[in-house]
Length: 515
Image 1 (cartoon, helix red, strand yellow):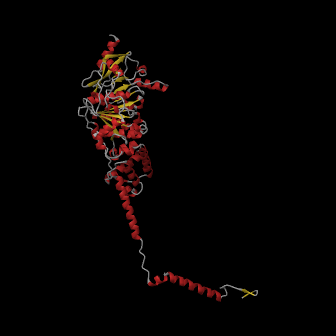
Image 2: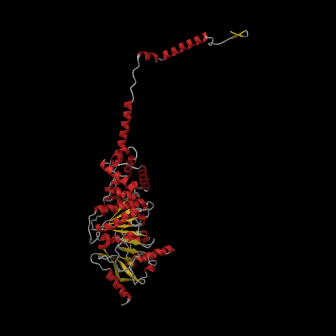
């Protein structure tokens, strides 16, 4: 059997699935696109997570845009983390050109420009649906991991949450948490220690510094009301398509701690809210995290373990997570091992370190007789990728060099006016963009301290003895006129006495002698 025929047979056998699947391109062999070697993506295993990797400019962001469109077509909602700001165009119709026509002709597919129902979201003051969460929703364990606290400090956090629960003090935003932290270390220290035990001032000081560090990355905007309900990510539009939620986080590239805080809370909330589903015919929600290294960049060991645990368990909830990054080594090995679909765009070998990474990357893919994987990774063109995924039995498919189809929506950003129009029409924006400042721990404790201060001042005033009324003799003696007369009389008497003793008055000198 000729090599080409053997290749086509291997691809058809490996990429034919039971259940619903979508065609995403055609395989390439020896530089030739083989239209009959069609590459399909099975929806049933899209909750097995995935990786989209490649150097800048190789097309990985457009790949996640294209996959998101096919998921939307199949009534699967999507959440896109738009780090670079180039995914908002998914809400606008795409444009055809000669490059697109040529690509679709080679892979034997028809290009139909489309626009998709999208929600623009934000973690800051930018235009979009505001995503927020309260401190209480994080809970003591997750908050301790985010702040990178040790066991002792984590115990203080747990005590704070218990104290606030017992006294009905809502922890909504960071100023609530800081106020409670300051209170238990000062005015309320005696009260707290009677019920909950002694608290180290060193621990409260360390926690406060960690919280302030989080504040400096803009966390005040994220913590508070109204809390975002994750069920609103899983909506279907009037045409039966899954709504694509685009979280615009271009302003978080230099604030990785805030980004990882949000992501971990979002995943934890999804895991807590969604019921066990087992293996569905297609996922309930798929998340694409672009520039995924931002999650792991400043994550502590405890935080990495938490992410790994959630990634392992959330699959059974019918939720898939795709990490998009320049280098596969950006993703910890423990997380990388959980990713069933791998889409590897080109990597560049500029240094010895780059070549080492490429060799390691190649070793993570199934062995094949059709390619020299290590060499091919550096030779892939724009919009081409090495692909392997899991079939419905959990078996990896043959490694394929694929020419991918391009997105059908706009491969560019929306204008400011288009963004404004989209947000103005959004029902979610109307729901979540209200300014709410409910009475919470900050206001309650402030009022408590003010009341205590007023009570202390009143008690001090009550203890001061009242001045007794003066007698008639005292009034006479204290009269200023009487005092002046007394001083004059006293001075006269003293001078008379001194004169009698020969010591008073002035002396005059006459005729050379003293008298």
